[in-house]
Amino acid sequence: MKNLFFLIFLISFPFSVLFSQATLFDESRVSSVYIEIPVDSLSVIMTDVLSEHYFKAMFIYDFGTGRDTLQDVGFRLRGNTSRFSKKKSFKISFNEYVSGRKYQGVKKINLNGQHNDPTMIREKLFYDTWKNAGLVERHTSFVRVYINHSYYGLYTNLEEMDKEWLQNVYGEKSGNLYKCTWPADLVYLGTDQQTYKNIASGSSTGGRAYDLQTNDLVDAYSDLVEFITALNQPVDAAYASQISQKINIDVLLKAFALDVATGNWDDYMYNKNNYYLYHDTGTGKFQYVAYDADNTFGVDWMGIDWSTRNCLDWFTHGEPRPMATKLLSIPEFDSKFQRYLDTIARQIINPSFIFPHIDSLKTLITQAAIEDTYRTLDYGYTMSDFNKGFTAKVDGHTPYGIKPFLSARSQFILQQLTLASVPEVKSDNQAISIYPNPAHEMITLDIESLNQESHGFICDMLGRQQKSFQMDSRQKTKAINIGDLPPGIYTLKIVNSKSFSCKRFVKD
Image: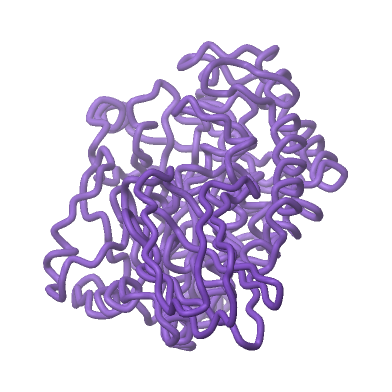
């Protein structure tokens, strides 16, 4: 009878209830993941590096005070360039061979090797700042990974961004979730859904640049096409209101500000890469989420000093980035973006706030890093490099230690925001419209009324004058050639003895 009751208990409750709770992403310790897999399967995984096939394995999770064991999980490589590294990254699927199974509420986890980061904390640190900025949480922790009893090193354990995650952070999971990878620039290419489906991802494993992760059997991209169409409309008086109905503007601007503040250049604005768009059916709006944030906090592959890159002109020029150029050309949105930047610089990446957290992460993982011999195989990083990576340059692609980068970046942002703090204003009798905006060769000014001769100036975001011109009281329009200006964000000022107007535009 007792056995029958226990069998009924097993059938009646979800798999995740049977396992220890709230330990999978325990940030207070470095737990251990053990994978036991046939040797021939492991050999195929390590040689056929572009394969997406899950091989059957046993998963054991040691959380310090106990262990959970799951038979028949799926195990494969994950990532893009890391597939070709010596220290590889992995994905574990708990429901690949047991339909519907979850472990502690999740169906998949990602184990990232952080092979190109001497400190091994950058990706976790980014997600911690993301959470501290009030954006939706993606759980992360550190784990030791063992495969067939061999220590493969220290890994970042990341929550899968799937339907379970959507339900947790948005309270529903029925909308379309798009994983957007290079070259997902959100440029309008017509109304045919197939056109956007046919844009290939630049990742090593291929697939779509706008890759639908949910509702994939229906495979309907109509909501994405509708959003891209609205996004690429001319910026007129109605644009701000209309686009605000399509995407959560506050979240988007805060996410942009966080990318800029943390030096996350492998993002939408600079590299048209590594973001999700989720069509939240509860609000009817798209939600923006950044991911794959290991190229942050001073990491560089472009020969650019990201600590002093213009925080108000972060995005790439010469290539379209409509979600950045159009939205940040709107005074209301640009002002909010700057306020987010200011708050992040003062309260989130400020050394007095973030350095103690960095120190705690370093202390937590040091012993596991010491024992991680795979960590040394790709770039030869020693423990001296590990320690130096927090305070000084290590090599060409990590020209900053994390702390010096944050000190320089937060200081630069606040200095630049002070220099660029002239608000966009208009007097009662002088309203200016600029079109097109963004522009490439020419802009045209529409002025309601000047009343008297006025002086015009175009200044860059550091306040330096780039052009000047005169306007008499009879002029209602004026065309200005901006073809000789470098790409960027500029401020146009019209000044006379009675009034002052200031408005921003983008030169692409």
